[in-house]
Image 1 (cartoon, rainbow, N blue to C red):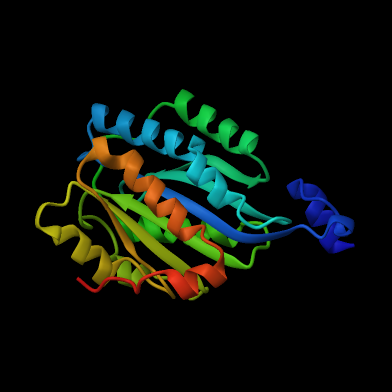
Image 2 (tube, rainbow, N blue to C red):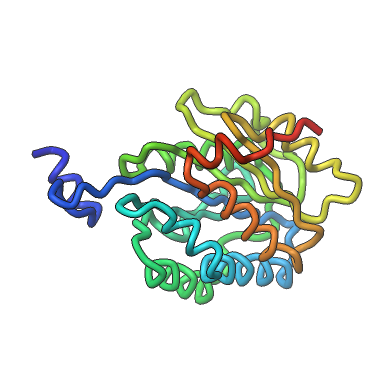
Length: 229
């Protein structure tokens, strides 16, 4: 009865359809002071376009009878985190179109605050703790700078079995990618994706989503090991 009530509350079908959630994915977007208005627009539009792309749709819907739960939040300073998309079950391309449409209409949640990566991880872990029941929990943190406020990311790593991936933006010399590889990402198969700048955010986000939404059997067999930069 408890499982049925939870399924109804989340909009999930009952046991008769045997629908299961394979991944709960929380996306954390950097809106710290290093991200100007133009870059914020490119980031938001880039994510919306990635979610509406054919390849990402295929990745979300790759396993018949199994769904993905999606959540999106913005983060900046230690007290500046805000959910922009509550948990939603992705069953169809129309569900992704709806999320993309809502993103396109949203204004920025914060600006002129520092980069609190550790608190971004903490907020993401709390968000995943409230996710629908899913086989895997994944947190994706994108950003263009290292931690300069609050607790460092390694101290924020949750005890729960959460995979944390990263997407770094504007990383000349791969310094930021090394920082994310050493201090932010964690868990089996965790990886760092790179965007040369915010113009490249859409393409990099597509690559990242396709990779982290790959069915587990394919991921284990075909994905390269996580980089140690």
